[in-house]
Every structure is written in structure tokens, then in C-alpha cells.
Image (tube, rainbow, N blue to C red; front, side, top):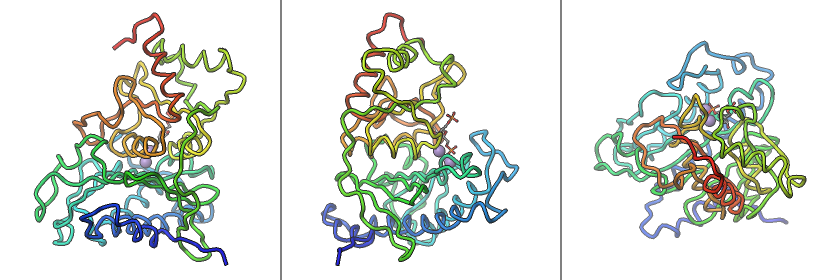
Length: 339
Ligand code: AHG
Ligand code: MN
Ligand code: MN
């Protein structure tokens, strides 16, 4: 019989990676896995259940329309994390401010989480992959008291763990605790995430570039020069443009196949679109742990010092050699990058 390693077994077995571990991080990851299964269940019946499709009519702090599944996923994750009592608070894309849990177990926890409960939500109504992205930090404030904003405003290199769930042709959970990247596929017949992609390594070079080409005219000349090179330069015939519009799906594909994902700043969004705390940083941690690279164009994503919970940052992320080549384009072309 083929032996199966479930997420829970894997987490417990790898607890030795943290010499002074109390099991809190392991339990926190299990809480996330549990909430992911519930969201998976709802995503999978989205076409059948009217309450899941469409918009709520509200606008979130990002100025974006909230979809019903955004709000459902947010509630599920917040509830699982609060009831689990393994983290002191959560900063969510869907909430203007962070939430400091008040019960005793949570206040005694050393961790806080930043989360994008539903990534790519505009794709849900048309049955295209969506995801969840999370980032776990050790708090810097005193334990046994409510967590503070400063606990979330740490650079990405301070992350203890990060991961994503992709609700795709199958549902997968991919995470890192800084010791490589492992992927688990949900087997719905037993309701368990099972290790399916151990030690994921991103190819150092791939043939995919992923960008919203519609924004081309709003990109800087150097970014345009790189994209022109991808389209017309030497070896361009081996490249393909692939863009789902769900960051989780675009990065997941590139992680397994090799490629670069770009969300540059534009003339009307000087910091790009994607959020540093719960989109860029967790993905940068995962991709670096898999052997790839991530940059804002001016610095390593994980080195950026955040100042706001919902801060945005440009991102260029993926196969190491492709990101390096892109960064050379930013330096080499004659026209200066406008500030
Ligand atoms: P969210 O659904 O959490 O707001 O995130 C959407 C993000 C990200 O998933 C995706 O890469 C990007 O928005 C797509 O933006 P464009 O439609 O501007 O290309
Ligand atoms: Mn998102
Ligand atoms: Mn979202």
C-alpha cells in the first residue's frame, strides 16, 4: 500500500525544525488547513449556491468591490484563527484595521497573521482558480497583552511561515517555514491535505511571463523595454504569456513550471496594485525558499520596511535567472526610470 503523509503528520514530524517549539506554530498551521477545507467546500459549490456568487454591494478599504465569497472566506479564516487561540491577531485585506483577539489563549500567543482570505475573487463567478495567501510573524510586542500594529509592520524577511491555498482543478496548500517549500493536495474523499509536492524547487529559468499587458502604456520605459524584449528579442519564440489574474494561480504555475510574474507600478498607481503584507511578502518568502527571487525593482521584496497595513508594492517574482535578467533591464536601458 502506498504510504500517505497528511498535512497534520507532516507538521508534527517537522516540528524539530524549531528547537524551542511549543507546538503553537504547528497548531496554527492546522487551524489554517481546517479553514481552507471549509472555504474549499464553498468554492466548489459556488455555481449551485446563489449566496456565494456575486457582490455584496460593499466597497473594502482597498476601494474594491467586496464579493460574497471574499466576505465568507474572511469570516471563516477569522473564526478559525480566533477559536484556535494560536495567534494574537490578524490583519486582513478585507478589514481596515488589524484585529487583536481578546481571549486569554490568543493574547498569550507569540504569533500574528496577515491574510488575503480570497485572492483573485473576481474570477470566482466564472469558475477560474482563486486562492488564500497568509503570512505568519512572531510578534514584537509583549506577550500576555493584545497585539499591536507594529507586530504586523515587520519586513518580510522576519516571517516565520507563509503559504497559500489554491482552489483550482484540485485544492492545494503550499507553505514554508523557512526550510524549503512543500505542497499538499486535498483528497476530498478523506478530507485531508496529503503531501504531493515535497521540496518544491522553482526552475532557474522558465518560458512563461505573466503580466497584465493591458497596462503596457502605463508602465515605465524600462519595463516596456523588457516586455518588448520578451515579445521580439532573441529566444522570444520560446516564451509564452500566461496571465490568470489570480496571483495565487499565476505564481503557483510559475513555481512549478518556471517563469516570471510582474505587477509593476503604473502611471496611475505608483506602488503597483499588490499588497506588501499579505500578497507580496508571503509569495516572496515561498519563491525564495524554492530557489527563486523577488524584487520591487529597487530592493528585495523581503527587505522592504512596511509602514502601513495595506501598503502596496511593485513586484517582479519568479525564476532566479529571469528576475535577474529583468533587474538588469531596469539598470541597463538608456532611459532613466522615472520616480
Ligand atoms: P484580490 O482578489 O485579493 O483583490 O487580488 C487580486 C489581485 C491578484 O490576485 C491579481 O494578481 C491581481 O489582482 C490582478 O490585477 P489586474 O486585474 O489589475 O491584472
Ligand atoms: Mn489578492
Ligand atoms: Mn483578496
